[in-house]
Length: 535
Figure 1: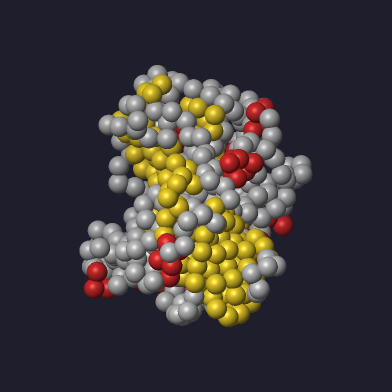
Figure 2: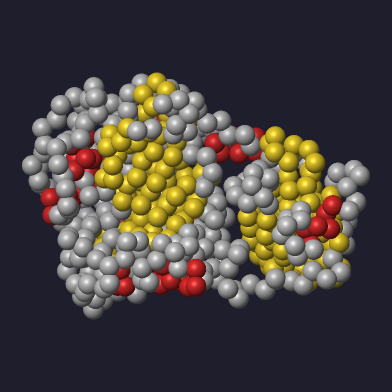
């Protein structure tokens, strides 16, 4: 079973931008450098249980690699990645983690002085906390982000080199590509549930044969405490970016990595280093993987894209990387089951799984969630609400924004209509303040359905929020504005709808009329229980 996106408006983005052969890796040497650094990192990190090497049935037997040994790529490579020349080994001039070294020349893609991105200002004077606050079972919140597109780009490893990477599945920010910068991400749209999270999250695309298998709906990306003293965790600095794992990792290295969390899972099968041979029909292929959470406080990026971040040792950050930041944990679900013999990653075998993170959170929003959830030892959802501590409330409001950050306009005197004939009374239910009532299309979603709201007077607007029920959210949408109901500006915002709350933000403009066009298709009806506009 392979996922086929039901929304034709996303077809161009969800379809590989190049023919199949060019989905392969164009520059594996650089990923090999990352793997070399990771091997040294694994040697320095302690964790509770390593156990026997965890290999799936049918995989070749591997001898555990002694700590610090050179990293080599797997000898068996998938059809979606090209067999490169001899796998890279650590470059003699490669700096140790956290220690800038002299520039080296590796052709056009090689690391150089320009690859060091300095934090401005740096975080200095931090001493790793060895405190033991009261034990809390969970210190976390979720970032629920959906897939936006696929590209053979990687703005961290191959900046400004479109098509240079293996194929990636991008989540969160809708604009992420080879040319992405901190500024462009902050200005982009997002498919994360929290509008203030415009971060880029990406991973190698999963293929079943030649068919891309894409996660459906918002995926779970945990933000946790990776250190014992969860009160010491602070937000990521804007622009921080790093890799977790490496496509050149061997099965043994993947299993021994502190990033490893039960490997690939489906049905009752778990702890698989490579893809299981089969998965029960109707199940999903799942994986969890944890990121390092100790930052050196000086660099937003380093030439190997990993040296500025390391894992805690026995729950404490090392002196070289004293700043405790959230530990990201990917929890991905891929809709594929049955015979898994044709399933592979764009980067190769299952143990080549890795992911990238480029932080573009609005700082106050991230800080509120870190303080309310991680520092307070709560288990929170994407709003920062803990069902185990309801009296504490949530960090964010019902539109997943900071309370008071925007003002909802008074809807007294507003009217609404729809493009559907014989639907005169229904649209008013979007404006009645009762979430128990709703307007509904009364028919499956098709491109061209639209609703229009007359705000009775021209006023400044910068955001709308549509609340639906269940699967009745728009599959895709475009927002248009007008001062007279005749001449329209837009679309001022557009994108796919992925959950019961659709929030569209745009530069503040003056408007009296707002039109939302439904541009996707679904067998579900389109419904809106509340239509809210913000200044």
